[in-house]
Image 1: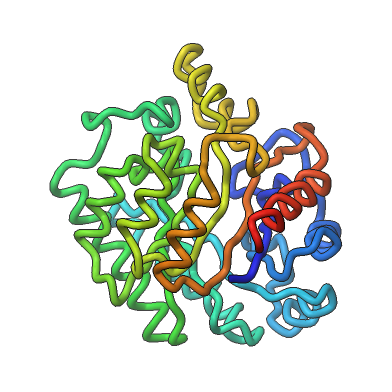
Image 2: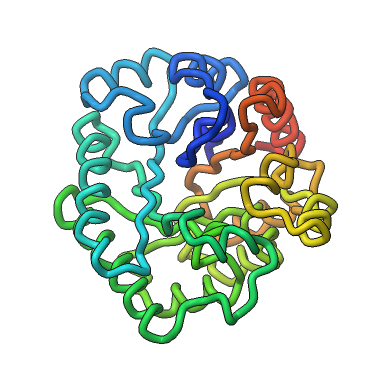
Length: 298
């Protein structure tokens, strides 16, 4: 297993924020300086969109590019065509930059639906998709994955995510059952799974070979409890630190690693700690997270 970090750990997220995140040069430099081997792309335009420039830049910092997050409002059929176009744009950039092994990390357009955003970490079945909605969602995910495979021979993984329609263990089960395991893999995120009410170790065992890509994110249950008590929405929960440094929350990373190892997982582990602008020092957090993983033998 190889260890990467992602721009979101420096506050470069797909969400609009009040403060500015560091630029891509600082992010890449600090990812390398804190001992990681790879990065994800970040939002479109965060890094160069010219493939030659992108490849030269990532190589300059002796990193590999391992994936790119692509949000698509999959519950809306009218959005599928644009979603396919967005995914192909990202896949094409990575392929032409000679990163054809990188993943398109497909997700819902998280944070776009008020109810799901307001109740992140405590959603109820009544807030979920109906039968028709699930069919539409799965069709959209399949369209994206098939287009990326047909056009560039690249693989797509789905990222379950709080504040989207696939947050809880039951919702993830439903999507995985509705999609082809040969076409759409899983980007397993330990922190989002825990905040969504699941046991990450059990999920790692359950999904096995369906897991093609892994995000290591920790979850602070104390902040999760406070979110329920105070009625915080997803963004406020993140600002309050619901995703803490690795080893300081509830996720048993040693157990998750042991499960992944038994199943023969040999892909990337991408550390993600959403350190928003003004919350802390991303480089220090990244270094602490890398040191923690070294204690686990990574």
